[in-house]
Image (cartoon, rainbow, N blue to C red; front, side, top):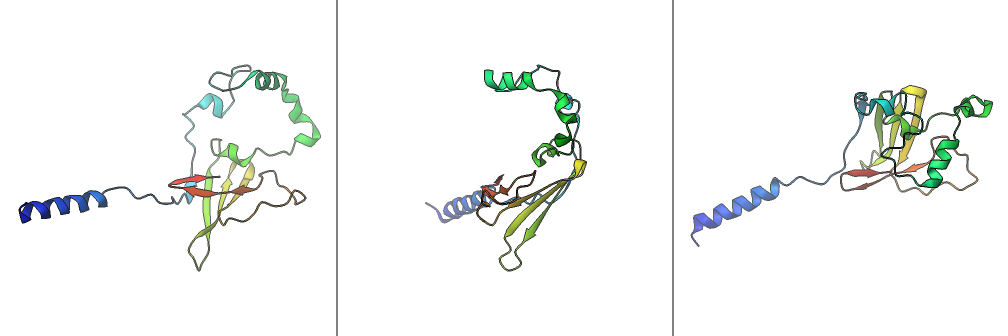
Length: 155
């Protein structure tokens, strides 16, 4: 095989390998604003009562949904119950995300999220810490452990 052809093949292979996207962690830091035109009925007022179209529910789930009463929210013990932080990602307020980074290793220790509407705050611990014991104080937002699977943050 001529030298020029070997060089061409080598350069092509190196160039092709360099053009392959790298699998890396993504930095979500910043302020994110919801786009309310997508699924606007479900994201604002909500769907019509009894509209379960597209939801993979069984008979028990349907029975639970049909037994729900909005008057539950007027009970004193439910009046200050916040929406969970996971709701806000597709809700109505701006989302701010920032990382706490270990200054020595450069690794992300915690990902903080804050949603403007109803002040939903969540900490996603990325340092492999164990879950708190059952007797520890629990928050409405729960305890979140995160890990990277390729470019996907799994919480």
